[in-house]
Amino acid sequence: MSNNNDIELIKNIKKGDVAAFAQIIDKYQHMAFTLAKGIVKNQEEAEEVTQDAFVKAYKSLNKYKGEASFSTWLYRIVYNTAISKLRGRKPATKDLDSKEAVQFEADYAENNMHRLELQERKKVLKQALNKLKEDDAFILILYYYKEQSVEEISKATGLSVSNIKVKLHRGRKQMQNELNTLLRGELNSIL
Amino acid sequence: MMNRKINNDEDKLIRDLFKDFTPEEAPASIKQNAMNRVLHDWVEKPQTYQPIINKQNRWWVIIAAMAVLAITFLADATVIQQYLGEFGINTKTLDISSLNKSFKQVFTIFAQIPSMVYFVAIGIVFLLGLDKILNRLANL
Image (cartoon, rainbow over all chains, first blue to last red; front, side):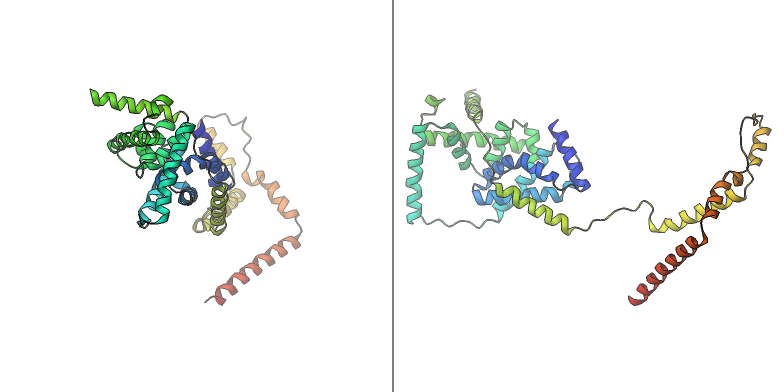
């Protein structure tokens, strides 16, 4: 039903009702932003990626034939844009002895302690997702939150089904490690 | 066996955690900037339309229409009635008079239009044609 609404909106946009695209943005911007941030791990870059993805989607609306749901098609654009951003990023040089690095480590530990006290599952989850490698967070969000099948995620990313399964397995393992690190063994008592 | 249990536990743990998950609030600037770019693109793009009759066929359509008008004016449709009669079709109930008679009313409407209208129309077409020729010559 939701995809039918999307298709109706797309028809209107193609007829020249550009304002209808604002409704598409309203509907998908939060998820697109979350997925983009899952890959680039940076607020500003995630904003850029989301914007670029929506503009790209608008420009290639004629290519959308309705074979997959519109959300899957859009998430694929988000995925590709985010991955391109990641590839084009210059490798960050980290000065481990710098004051900033030392401060970061201190803040990190303090934040974790704070989270342990507050037991905020949401924050812990976001923190853990932010620690995952490249597109693992993207895949985990689609799988566990959007409850998409492996096949649907495969369409949204362009990766093979077996590759998605491997990444899901790896993501789960890494997530478990991150959660253990963040919660230092108290996770079981929280849950 | 042991590995599968661990995987299942991990899966359940993460699934439970995701029950509380909500997507991050996207900054308002995303929609604003994306729509600005989309509108900019839309304004920049020339709006084209597909003519119902393309240029090449346009003249053929005009010639065909004129031929149909000429035939309707000249042809005697009562012949058709005779043919139908030969095939044993009862033509008494059919009211097929000659097409030129049928279209007589149409032609009388044209005849009633003051000649000034025709002269003005021919003048406008002539001026448009002249303008086009001069434009072509200017762009040589």
